[in-house]
Image (cartoon, rainbow, N blue to C red; front, side, top):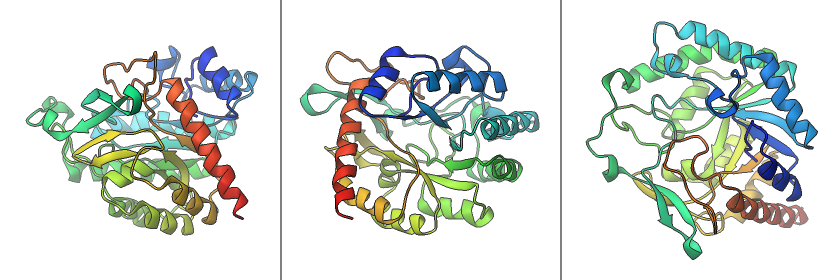
Amino acid sequence: MLLPAKIDEKKWTLAKQIGVDYAITKAAPELTGELPPYDFGTLKTIKTNFQNKGLQLIGLEGDQFDMSSIKLGLPDRDQWIEKYILMLQNMGKLEIPLLCYNFMASIGWFRTRVDILERGGALVSGFYSEDVAGQLVEERLRVSEEKLWDNLFYFLDAVLPEAKSAGVKMALHPDDPPVSSLKGVARILTSALAFETVWDKFPSESNAITFCQASFLSMGENVAELAERWLAQERIAFLHIRDIAGDKNSFRETFHDNGPTDMVKMFRIYGKGGFTGPIRPDHAPAMYGETQHSFGGSTTVGYEITGKIFAVGYMRGILEAVKTEG
């Protein structure tokens, strides 16, 4: 599960009680009150805290510090890339083998509504392009697709060899939602073809994919065929499991068992494809007694614990059933 880097007795304890042994976390300073994980001591303490609760920290996810200079290609980006490399080296020393990252500039994963009713009145988020029609971020935060591609290649050229040296898989997450532009900000990782472009440029074992089912589904991709192909190429390092109803311009999240994706079929594909990496439930509904915060990205929406408990149970049930099929 994606769990808070700052000690959270409720979520950490419940995770253990439902059979979760492995943690992914976001250790950004705004969430921890500490230095970013390019500080060795900070990252070591976070890992130790998880260990003390019986959880093994196996990956970091998201922007672990302000990535604006890197993603927008600002004059000081090299000094921030050096800090990124320090973080990779720290991960290697602490045997944290996975880094789920994205290259969404200025606006991270994004939703326009957080109060949509799902089954039984549970609350989910959604994205509706008409809600943001005509809206623009300030000019200094805008970037073109061409510039963003250049910035991504510059970044990967610098960090992928360091990731390989550290023994860290960098698993690229697709843009969510996969629309370009969003409030005047270009997005480039909006199709399977975009991921092929990244692979063609950097065919490295440290260059991997976070296969977020619902993100690729929202692109209109055939997620079953795509998963089979990339698993055969050993390019998927991390699985995000969630579902949506709709398309990239208009969709809402669903319960894990209440969307259009054949989850059992997908888990069969992961098993037959030989996937042995981490798999986690992604966004889940807020259920009885829980509330969705106003959207601020990161873990403000879709990360209340009850929906995650349901998702883990559902996923474990499918895994056990698929295992018996041989």
